[in-house]
Image 1 (tube, rainbow, N blue to C red):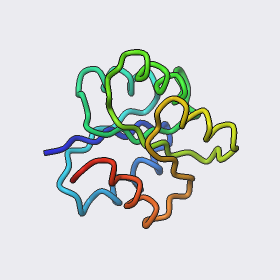
Image 2: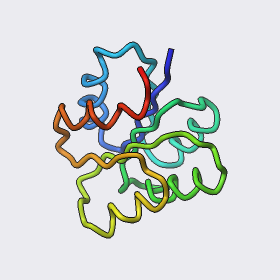
Image 3: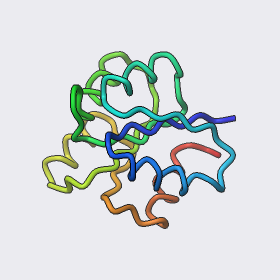
Image 4: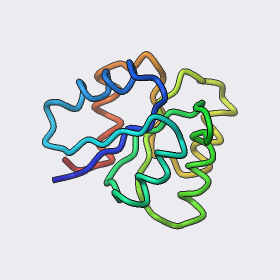
Length: 118
């Protein structure tokens, strides 16, 4: 079974993403900030990370940089309300496989998670 880690400090966002994943046969892990997210990336070795950018303690940009630096090869789909072109370019530069803007559109979500064969 594939494992997906949701890293987002907003509980409502995590709930929405989990509901969108209900029809998939996946194990879902959650982290409420970047520090917890990074610890779970290392301990859980998820098959996909759904990552918010602006969080306390450690932001999503730092996680993307750390993933790149550590060569972990875990695909990341960024989920953020920050849709500035520079933000999206930075995420792409650090290897994000897709960028979803909040609020999430279901069809865009389904397309984005195709990076993980489910």
